[in-house]
Image (tube, rainbow, N blue to C red; front, side):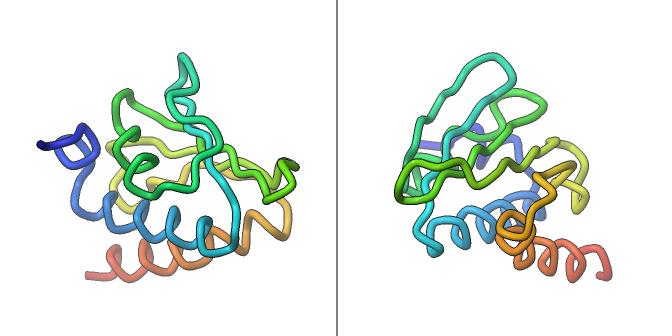
Length: 112
């Protein structure tokens, strides 16, 4: 079964997003996915569930919460922007640190 993420996200976008979600989950956080209309995933720690919910619209907002349920921040993904997939994020130390690995993947891909 092909998901919208596999079908509609470019290979570069899939690599960047997979790294981002992996790093968020490795830090012990959960993710909610908002597709611009509704939350399609709420407070999940399941990587496949999160990734499968992405790329159903032109943008997704990942809302990140820590283990206690406190909001860590958000990351806005704009599909179709290639390596500029991460369009915006919370300007705080925790969120910026979570985006660092995905940013390095994006820079590496952009330099090819």
